[in-house]
Length: 96
Image (cartoon, rainbow, N blue to C red; front, side, top):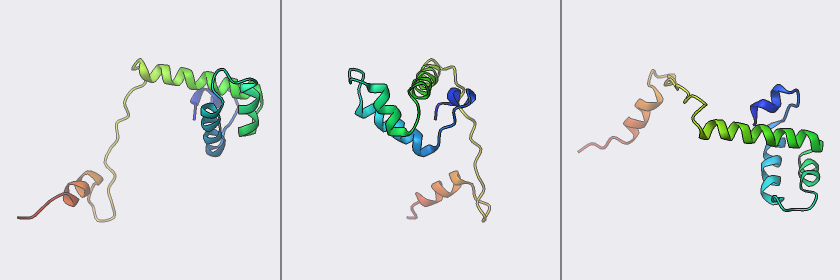
């Protein structure tokens, strides 16, 4: 979901965002009434859809130009005390 559009007060559910993404694929740039069709597909207004698209473009640009830091994922412990990395290593371990 595009973070900038949430900051502007237009909240999008995961379902609406998926519908938006699918509609972007279905209604390409040269499609007549593209924004109206996309808005109808995800239950939003044309203005909301355009703002969401602009925020998505901005987010993608920030990612592609390395303006978004890579998250520092810390291993999550399981109930047995093993981390996910340790569990993956053990899963792929082969005994001779």
